[in-house]
Length: 491
Image (cartoon, rainbow, N blue to C red; front, side, top):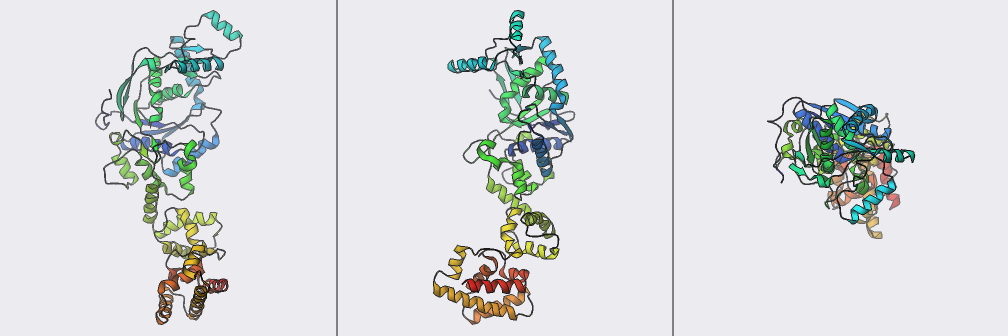
């Protein structure tokens, strides 16, 4: 029976020490970022320490590139660590503990071949058993060991699981006892000599004096195994808190396999999401302060974060909410800061270089206004300011320039007249341009929107965007006259 989880605010003493232990086998998963954030917030809330520990004992899959990508993603989010460790550099520490387990009789060498293990697993499935290893090498005779060694077998090391229930006291999910019949003797060192996750994790937690292990519920099955290893070694067991899975809209776990780079933190950086927005969004995946507040500053998150407010059920990844948050944070930037933020995206597209006038760029950003969902949106929304090499959108042309010959001739007439008006204007000022165009439409009984959209498509290729008069003045006389003439010829 699960007990009710409790808050730590009244029960904790001493320094809080938490950790994140990602495997460098790819990009930082959005769920991994959430784990890092919850640990970081928890540490900051209690003025504790956040440790980054790279779990690279899977040498076949771990890469330096992935490790540095994880570093970069965490730094971009503003999640900084107080201490850093790499598990592959700590092999001698794990070896000492393995010797202790073997000498105490709490672990043993298993000489099973891959073929034998597969046969055992198939038999277990056929008998509907929860254990996939039957413990056959728990009590080998010296003669059997000698025979296996002579055959050239390389042993793994297994922990002897206890025959009494293991209590898992979880700060989110509550307490429960794990039936020993559901647990098998776990491999703690592979036959190649490399220690596995459950061994290195609990040893490092003890060595680094980790007080709380906050991680996803996908690790829940590992917890009793780690507790068993800690008990066998006489190590102090940290408090555990398993946070809910991140799910897609259909209730499926968000994974690299099924969702690709949709779960990659760096994808959002590269597409022009602000770290503040991603951080705010990730914090709300499984945690809430109340039913009202959606937007939190980092200081507010640190102040308000409490494991007691972490839910038990999975949290849905809603990209629309992230887009809404990102738009909010972009619009909170002043024009200068917003311009700084979008300049790299213009540069990446080859639209600007260092010679562009800063004031002009800021005026473009100001004209775009609150239309940006991501910083990357600046490119399609403003490309026409930097080049006249664009196509006219077919739907816009059909609607505003006309699908019939008669309508297109009328549009050409309007554009010809507007071209003459704009050519004669002494100064390209917003008010002067607006007054001149409205004077023409009103005196000739032409719908304002028809004239505006006809000219907008001529200048930008699209029927959407900033104020037409801002576009005219920002493009300047030469570009406006050139594009209007080109459009008339096209018609």
